[in-house]
Length: 89
Image (cartoon, rainbow, N blue to C red; front, side, top):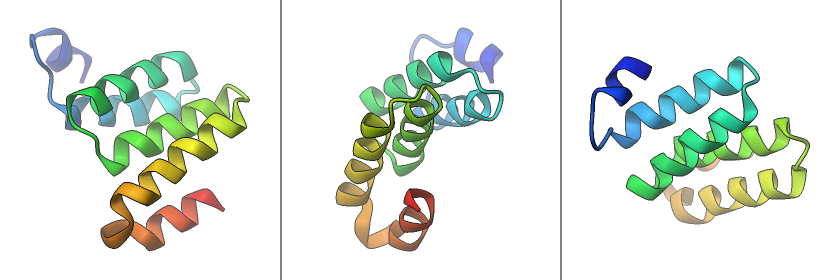
């Protein structure tokens, strides 16, 4: 993923969001947050907001994490409601 992102002037929001989730899994909170925010800037998606939420929670910024999850819920409610509720719990 990093090679794809580094080799592109305008990386896909899907690739950025995917790398953000990988970095969350590796507990690289700041890097995950940076990728999630770039993905959201390129094109908001539920996965990018979830990665942002998890990165904030990993950084012990729970209120920011919950807010990112709420934004995802508000923007993508109709298509991802069950998934978002499970993550928020």
